[in-house]
Length: 379
Image (cartoon, rainbow, N blue to C red; front, side):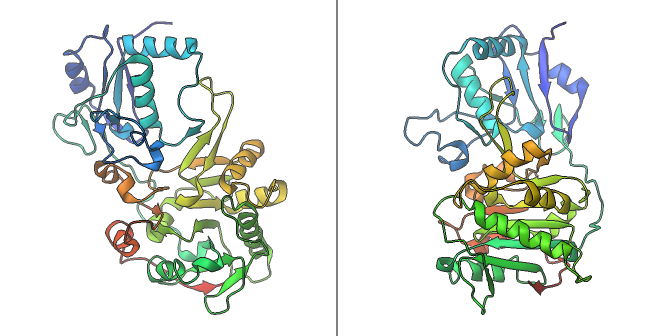
């Protein structure tokens, strides 16, 4: 196997100007530990990065690369990293894989004592003169082929939040016509909610989520010909959604395939990749094709009512051959938990948590689109 001086990493929507890139790399020595890209920085410790810097003195200059803008590793750095991973006797990083770009930069820093050098004029989020690599989104569909009639929404809630969180949802992304149901521990005929028969749990919500999946499959199998849903969105009662953007994304996929779409996390992966599994993080919103929902309902069970629903879905999906598709427009946390330049790359589909924010302001600034096509059916 031949070796190269430089190793370039890009995403599927990244574009490379090879002549600019080659000319740029002439200024660096591949025999040194070189890490190049477009640097992002956390403004404060955040949950998606395991609160890095909260309980110890973090490097104020710590940067991590925006993968969509591409990044480059020198031969020397890649060799050192591979050797360190092969010989390390201690665990590297957390059992959870949440944000690969931050985790990669942290691993390189710890194992190789190398930092990212940021060149935003060469590694770009938009095509500009002088860019070696830039992000250029290619929509799979120019227009949305789906309407809200293709989408059923199940919101997980409980009685303690009926008067706190649900009004926010009903005044923002669920303000117009949607096929939506609120699943709670008790029935409330004013909202209305559907009683799941599952008591509220502090942690995981596996049993409640399975009730929603079964409800959706029962709708598919019902005799009401007016309800022909292709997709199921399961959201928390403190998740904010752009329905219009979600429908545009779903237009790219076939609901007859076994797919789940959302923000993909991982758990238990080894450096070899032979262990561990992906899962769709629940707070960002989980979208199931009708085929995936049927498969899960027929073959998956909850170990306990409070098992983590998203992780159980991940384990089932690996066993049953359901593809979990990551989309960076879904967000498990709040806008303040992400670097501002990162959020400019894609129009967001979701954010999660109402803590210490104004959810109405977040919705209007990041998610609202006046052209939503909606219809409403309370189910």
